[in-house]
Length: 131
Image 1: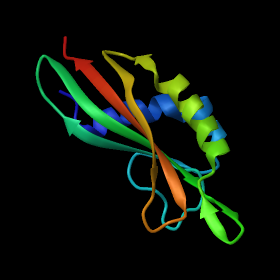
Image 2 (image 1 turned 135 degrees about the vertical axis):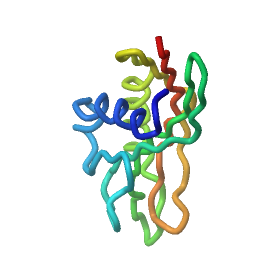
Image 3 (image 1 turned 180 degrees about the horizontal axis):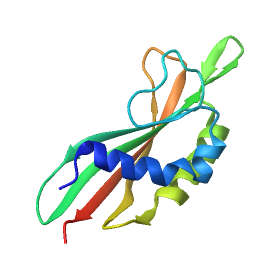
Image 4 (image 1 turned 120 degrees about the horizontal axis):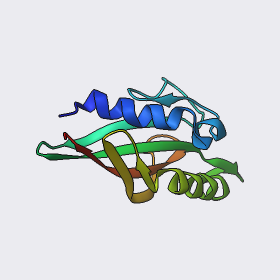
């Protein structure tokens, strides 16, 4: 069985050298987003981690994007969100690693409460076979 930490390590290693990590202005993290960051950070987190002969886990890969200020009002940066949605879908669609695979299960754009930014929530289905 892989722990939450093992799964985050697998996804982090895959993303570290990817086009996505090179494209964003911020950091790739498997713990927390840097405090007070206003950059395009990528944060990996585990939602659920099961057990069994074929272990399944759900993982979030969240990409934060600052809103644009127009006429004294903030609005989502739809151009940048669209670019990063497309890129992350391409990179996360289907990946095969050493004894594991993961695929994009769902992608959504959500407003971050209390901040002038949105996030792209990429929900992955991660599968690991013990044998």
